[in-house]
Length: 76
Image (tube, rainbow, N blue to C red):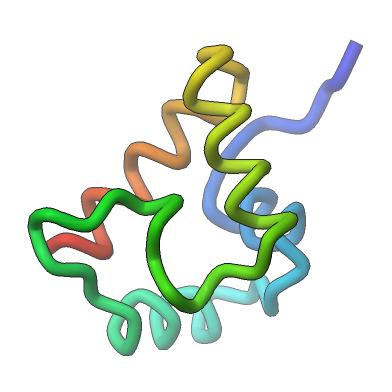
């Protein structure tokens, strides 16, 4: 059983990105998405990251809610 509590810090680590508070804030500030672009379709993800998003969302995995929060933050 995976005991990671899905939050932005652990999500960014899972994605292979810097995951300290400042790096997360900077990423969100500089990677906004148009309303019609889904998070998994963003041009800045690599193939593995896109597949991770698609799988987590499709399977309603433990990461889905945190991904939805990131999606909302990127669309603001």
